[in-house]
Image (tube, rainbow, N blue to C red; front, side, top):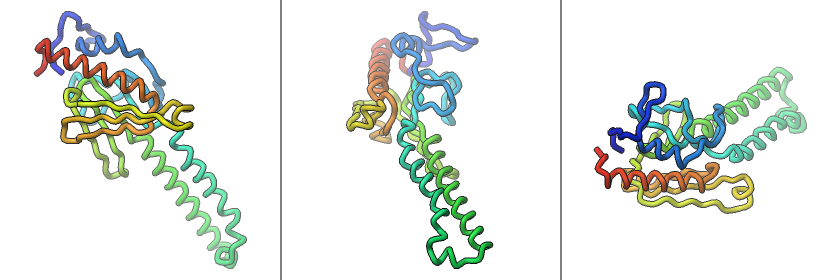
Length: 218
């Protein structure tokens, strides 16, 4: 989108807002929680990312719905109870008490690492929609993450799917974005309010096309 401001632009805290952002705020209401662990928020005030351009505003912040964590949380709780039955099995029962303590401590350390890895995978895998582009941050491990982006004007199609009892009851689903960019498809998986996300994207595409017609593109 253009870095040109019109009479419709305004200043907030000394920062000029683009007309496109003002137009979006007219149709996109402030939604979602503003806490650290939120999975859905529009116009989050304190979200920034590594490759963010000057003047670029985050319109939608997303991560997977918290319900996707339920399977590994249940699994971790079951794993925590296993040491209570270790004593019924000969390999463990025949060990000296000191070795049993080491094995049990190692098991709890393994479970802790499992929980931490699963939580970090959920917390740091995020999806962003800015006034310029869509951003997919894939957190693979603590040493590596992959950031994929596509300009709004490169979006060709947006598909929303939400099926099954769990997705319907808890209000989450998938958003598939086809683009003409280097990454041909973005998949926002198991995100809250997928229909709202789809509508916002389509509205942004309309605004982008309008800006191109009005000649405000770089």
